[in-house]
Length: 537
Image 1 (tube, rainbow, N blue to C red):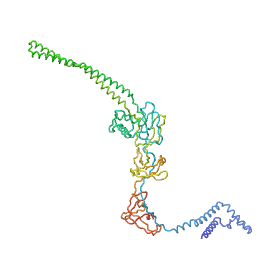
Image 2: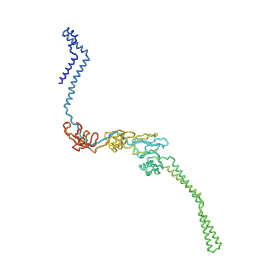
Image 3: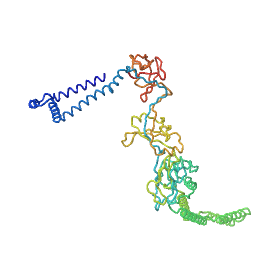
Image 4: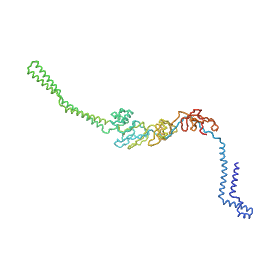
């Protein structure tokens, strides 16, 4: 059959060729007279010349004709031996069957996927207050290494020979704590001292008293440094105040002695009492012995004289000036004692703001250090973070609102294994940012894993809904609505490739939808794992 078609094509091409060039025997009239005068062989040569002349004058036409013939023959061959087999195969293929998928059985979860940066939690830039340092704030030592941990009572840095002591707390040190000041920073100091085993007094009392000041000395001794010097020469002030107290005490003693010397004479009063007693005895004797009137009168006058002398001896003298001197001396002593107390208070240890660093959630890890030994401290000295690893990423608002604190998540370790994490915070964007901040805490990691993950960006999958165990699930395309609004799936009982395969409808109750799959539970009919459900025809 194919040979006949080729022959027909060739015949058609010959006919077309003849129509294009015409019959060589039908030459123009001018040539007829010439052909008549020649013999038959000559006539044959003339015919060949005519053909050559026609061909040379229509060269482009001949080339086009040849190309057309070749294309026609090639098309017939391709149509027969290439296209025809494909068409025949299509004609022989069976009618299309049902499009099915198997019912799955297993846990189903709906997830939110974000990118997260792995790093240590809560990074903080450490800045040291150097305003109280009289000279340049030169870093003299104790520069921590990267990865070092700062705990309570750690010396984070040494500036101008003085330590910067790490203590637990939230408030930054913003003033020097000295005797008599009060406020929340005093409470924080007392709580920090209690946490390190030093008694600074009751934290409920917000006054920096003598007990709190003495705790400063114990604090510096715990880190191997001497306590800070007072702003003034406290020892000299105390010594001067003590000398003033001694002088005032001596002046008061002298004034009191002067007052005593200006008062009544006890001996003179005693002698006057004796004279009165003797005079009264003489008078009584004269009366008892029957003395003359003159003798009795004389004895009476002597008694009166003795009593008058006694009254004079017993009368209080004017000691107002002596008493005023005593009062003045007592006042001076009281003032000197107050001055001594103040001098002693001023000499009590104080805690400079630049020598303490309060940090939350100790211990802290040193992530970066900008301070160098021998350099003048300026700006942040270092960056510290929590000792625990954290994941920080962002999510679109719609996804973020699906997340809750405590949600389970997973991310990939460097070896490809999945590692668990937990959402710790979901916060709206700040400063006009539309994306929300999502913070997560990974499950415990080994030091090697921490070293490999630090600073990397990982893909985090957060489950926002999950089934309580294994369930049956089908693609959403397998669900259809029944006449009563019920949800159904169509289960194939035979070969789905068979157009006449039997199917049955199973009424189901749907549950969680995730990733295009829907949790289902049969309520009318039976449905099992690997059953084939129809998703298309």
